[in-house]
Image 1 (cartoon, rainbow, N blue to C red):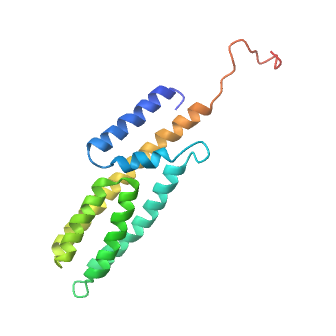
Image 2 (cartoon, rainbow, N blue to C red; image 1 turned 135 degrees about the vertical axis):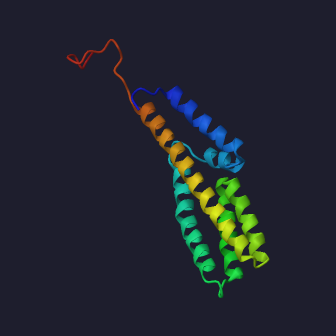
Image 3 (spheres, rainbow, N blue to C red; image 1 turned 180 degrees about the vertical axis):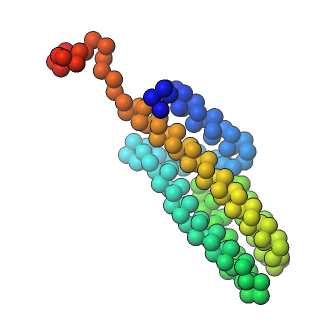
Length: 164
């Protein structure tokens, strides 16, 4: 961390964001979320995203549980879970995850269990990818904030003379 300049960290953040936008992982909603972050709430985006991840993990577990039982597969409950995941994914700008939810919901509407199982696998993959990439982004952002907070003594000051 000590070797990375503020400019390099900012460049790394922008490069990672550009990749995520180019891949369709994120959309402009994520930028709008970032605009709500300011000095009074410097961790706003990471806090919102962490809540999203916590809630999404519950929804993914529920979806998997609904698909486990072949005979009692409740497609209506599945649709409710998918709608919640789709809405929260949209609210943070998780575009690819939202799109997989749409495909999953279509399979669910047709009571297509094999299609739902494939969609769940893809949903879990996209979720993990998003979580890892946003974790990486937040780590870079945290390093940037720490580097910005570091204050070096001016060259004319001497350690022996605190009044200098």
